[in-house]
Length: 353
Figure 1 (spheres, helix red, strand yellow):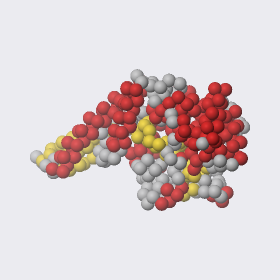
Figure 2 (figure 1 turned 60 degrees about the vertical axis):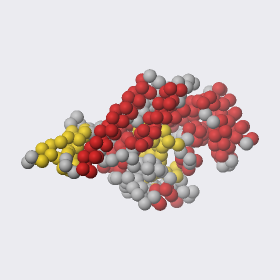
Figure 3 (figure 1 turned 120 degrees about the horizontal axis):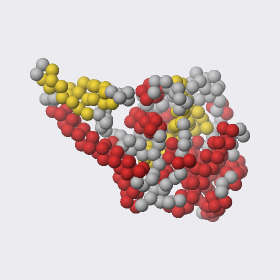
Figure 4 (figure 1 turned 90 degrees about the vertical axis):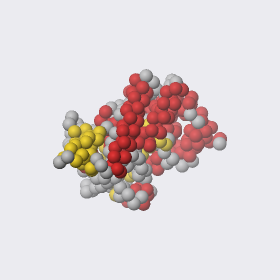
């Protein structure tokens, strides 16, 4: 497992801070531009931005002689310069440092959610899209075979969604803005609420949440007030996965500041869920990816991460009882011999702490 050069790791940190700052900016995205238009001998500002179909969408801003509007235009020029710089940083990190970038559509989906406020509302990327972000977070090159995906999974704690008193815009409208073929997928329970959306090409966006500890809540999607009309599938072990998340960067466009599970929780969670997959073709493929991702992260963290952090998470999972212990040991047993030695070392260290 090779770590990237310190100079590239410094660029990652700079890009992450700039991208995080940019998400707090205004309605006028750096990808667009202000244009002055004269009407009856008076100048007015308009804002042109790409419409996603090769053209431009124009919005009225206000008169050019309004000092507040003119100040905003000047500020936008600075933001646009920063936007171009961030795009160059992303290009350097993917082309020269060899870090992982998502496919374009996945990047667009995550960027749209980020701009809509998903991470401000404490949403968390989970699944393979989150795994892609550990390459930059740990500063290591991860193999492309471990990150192939055709979906995006997003989690939010149930209690947070119920108490936050804020919401994303309508999820289906947001997705249709990226691809008008997106549709809500009926839930297997027959519930009128939906936690998943899919487009014509089969790309799936799914919302997940923590299990509330009773089978009464496990058969249908949970109502999530902060998710713009989307519900979420309650899953066992999700509370363990999304506790104490970390901020990372998705290397798409100008960089997208995201929140993901900590790499140690992601790795242990993958070990636990691997043995619970269905014993069919689909389940086998997911199990293989679970184990591959877990062992890659464990090998990377052995070399380039805080050993005690990983050990503490192993210990926390182990102390949750016999069923968790059995799942952990089964998951470890599916890995390569080298990865098994690393995992058992973390586990033993955690149990001794």
